[in-house]
Image 1 (cartoon, rainbow, N blue to C red):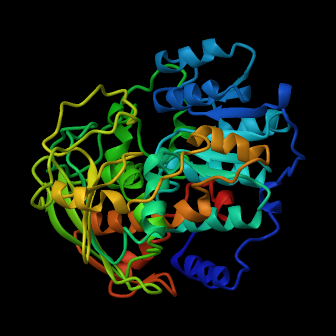
Image 2 (cartoon, rainbow, N blue to C red):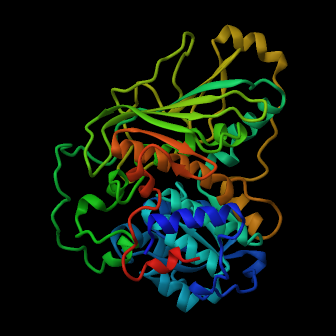
Length: 472
């Protein structure tokens, strides 16, 4: 059982570099790496429908994988049949724990595309089993889970990790770094990050006063494994097929969904770390169960090295647009944004992106791999001759992971980089959930003004049988 005392003890140990144990608690296999046919990476996929199907297609297009196993709690359902048909020789499982137990010596890497709440136990078991891990963002749902995963990855430097914010392998990543190194981006003081598209997953009554009633399970669905470590909920279709994203118990809302695609380069290259203040300044439709229809969250980061304090303000919701600076121009939409199983949303007044304010310049950017531009246009023309050449990406995000598994490259979004951003989002979600302001001490990793919120850093105790994943 994870308690607040356990969590704070772990944080103290982690700061001394002692948080991770021997790994024997999960009976780690630590198998030696074996490459597939023609030097391909032997891989197992966990979550093979919807977004899982998309990333499986991306991995397939690299020509660098040999698919050994498929795992999905809905194995055989309509949305998983396509991938099953693509790999008829791959072993099939509904429970990822059985997959590791029965076929763990046959693959070297896993790709995980499951609901946010299940990222942690699957990734933890994969690391303890000696596997390379690719997992969709956000890395984890709670602050504590992200901390444990970062520590687990750091303990195993020969195992490759990659989080699925694909923009880290596209033009925005390389442009931001090149412009920062050349002094084009400097003295950043504020960022407005915005996701104002139609909410893709629900239009429910925000006066909700209880969780949805139980319904008949879909045929052959393994609901117990789907729930993972989360306290028991009766099955309801409002939790399934992408609907899970809006529930505090299962997802990270618009912030966790889009934040990693919008704020990733700002966070990494400006070395923002963890905020000292997180304040919910606006909300519409606040309730105890799912995310509000719109919200504004202020994240305040301290001065670092020679860089000034930065305020990041997050805006989500159709009616909650950020202030738009003069000369902003047209809001572009990144063509690399993957579609969803809920269908394509109509065009928004302002497509997902960011506005970066410095002491001298203003930059406009989108999400994923979208590049930055200087606004207004007159200033962009004035700066055109001063802009450095931006290097091309040597590999896309999936190739980068596989090449790293083969020892050729290093991943651009490993757990130790993305995990801190995941923790930033978890603090934002706590501010949304409690409808409040939080003060955070990044040295002790504690919330200092709200004892109840501080206990939430560890999340609720895991269900019986799932606590083993928290004991590393």
